[in-house]
Length: 326
Image (cartoon, rainbow, N blue to C red):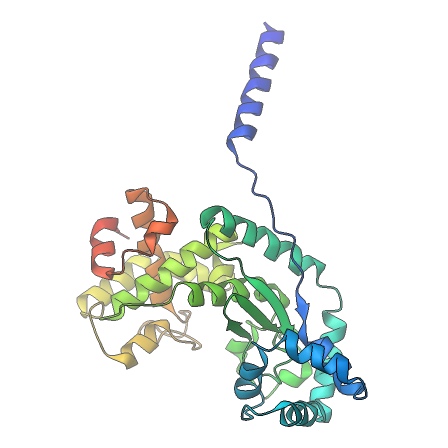
């Protein structure tokens, strides 16, 4: 009898393991635009190395010049002059040194991103895969996307206690400047570019669209804590889970869901220390989280592949077919 019991346990264990499909991670490398650029600038005599660098990053440099350096696109000489000028700032050089020290080894980031990209490949086998770079932003944009490339500003993730952030950012912004935000922010930026908002008539459409992005993000990062996907801390997450019904009823009673007021949309979905309607104990972007909850209910009820989720662009239809009831 004992032998039969252990045999059954073994069979069940093998069955469970075989049912759980292993996803092969992508072996990827993060290109070091930041390091390569600096090496080019401190070794100006090598025209062949400079030419190779300009050719490699021909797609990224125009955006880097206009978006980060605020310099006009120009010829090779003017481009190099603008890059030299940017890197001649002493404060920026301090930030660069700290960024290089903090991110001299990117293997852990590459592993997490590779696992997520592997899951993306399983969900969208015909889609091009994202590729990643790291750049120095001068404390500007955290992430830049160009086509299938996602470039991460390493200097925006030096930790909330990094001295040069003090006086430059609000306290609520500093929590997003931790190294553990990189993977979420990079993937989210890619998904926003890959699945752009094609139709928005009201706040509900925007909420549901953002909810789709975060739902897909949760599939790519199944081991991440739910609050990490939204940039919330545990206290904020607890407030959300306890206040979900109250928030939903407030939005419905005040007819906010179908509002076309951009100011109202920003209050529900924009960066801020809290959501104005619910007091300072609430986190920001409550509308984004509510959109995620609607999409989560929709996907459970409809049982469709995630690739079909983005084909339905009407927020009202998704809400009605979701059966969402907080």
